[in-house]
Length: 219
Image (cartoon, rainbow, N blue to C red; front, side, top):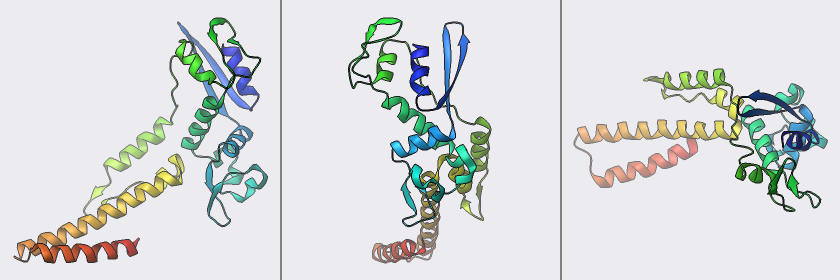
């Protein structure tokens, strides 16, 4: 089964490494520049590019138009690499001439059905887990926990999130940061009004409406 899966991955230029352990083996999958780019095109991964619109599905024919092209495999973030490998594994389907998983006669294969699911259901594969860069994740966790201060309320590590998880995740937390700061300002303003005895519900409603317009256009 290990050789069978390795041969499948080799067809699409994925790199594999096998480490034997007491009751089986650990099958490690990484990629090359070609494998990541081919998978990104196949699964329509949207990447930031230097053209209009700024986010487009990755295409190998105009790969030079996408940001960090000269970085090779590092053109893709760690999260994107994990995503592409997982999508490739999920995409493996049995061909018409494949009836069983080699070495496991009870593991029947059916045309068009997921090979990974069959490997898992028969206990051949016991766990599929993404390998993260622990040092980078630890650094982000530390900067997150230490970011609280009066000066910036709660500062998200936007740049680190962009580089590791991708622009979509960075954009989301940038929104969370912007929204949190806006709510903090609104809460302080309403608190001051209440302390001054001007906390009527009608006045607070008007202030909230005005705040919502200001917040929307401040982004």
